[in-house]
Each structure stands twice: as C-alpha cells, then as structure tokens.
Image (cartoon, each protein chain N blue to C red):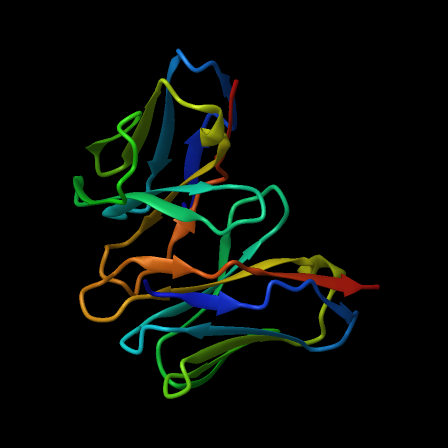
Length: 112
Length: 114
C-alpha cells in the first residue's frame, strides 16, 4: 500500500508569517507531486505541482521536493487569513502507476 | 473555460431510489474521474475513464455505475445506496491519464442517503 503522510494539524500561524506544510511518501518511484487547497465545504483546488528535486516558486507559494528523502513541502510566505484551509499533498505512483494518492491533509489556520 | 461542472449540487435520496450525478468539461481533457470524499478525509478514487474507456475501478460496489457517453461527459448512476454512501462526490478531469497531469475538480455533489 503506497502511503502519503501529512501532519493533520491543525497548524496555526500568525498573519504575515511563513506557513510550512510537510509531506512524506513511501513509493520511491513516485514522479509527480501536487498540493491542493480545500476550503471547508468546497472542492480541492490545485495550487502547486513539482516534478524535479529542488524548489519551485509561484507567487507566495514555494514547493520543495527531495526525492532522496521522499519528502515534499509547501511554504506559504506572508500568510493571509484567506489561506486558512486544508492542504492536501498528492503523489502519483512510480512506473505506470498513474493513480494519485492523497495524504489526509493538514488544516492550516492563519490568525489575524 | 477551465471549469468542471457538476449537477446537482445537493441530492437527498432514499435507499430504493435511482438517481444520476452528471459532470461536464469543455477543456478537451481525455481523462475523467469520480472521487468520493467523507468529512475530514481525503478524496478516495472510485473510477477513472481514459479516452472514454474505463481504466480503473477501485473495487467500487455495483450500486455505483459509471458511464462516459463522450469525451466531455461523465455520469455516475446510483441505485439502492446505503446511508454510509452519504458523502461529497467529486468529478475531476485531466488532459490525459499519464501521471503528471493536473486534476481539475468540479464543485461536487453533496449526497445524503436516508
């Protein structure tokens, strides 16, 4: 059973701080890594994806991938109350296993 | 157009009813998905269609019957559901089903089975 692990939180940060969300995965052959944001009662929305080791930046979001450590993270700079949501890490399997496995999600609360 | 449209948004049905959930996308995507999500849980994959053919069935009970009439449409037919089937049902699409594709989710159907 391929697993994706996230700290369920809740993670609470003050407005303007950096929020750091972490995810580990068990399938060493995994190729593609995604972060989805889900507001309460809404559907998941893709906010970042990363395929190669290193950092990828998009606005206030930074995704970091370390395949050797099987670790992917999401940093949110200058956190805003509107960033309060559940963040789902999702990973595709190795080889021809294209199925996306979601972690259980981390609930982030940004306090004004 | 980057939307995946799902109808209805809410559905209440009895255990003997037959109903259908509908999903539509006009992004030219050739992979479409059904997910089930319970409260405070991650989405669980149910079915994947790739080029209108069923590629994955995650051992879903036969009371759920998917259908992909064409590349833009995806249906989920429901019959004789149980109360434990109450959940948010999400449709999603991606350009293809090759693992590095981004999923676009619809807004979901909140289903209650009485």
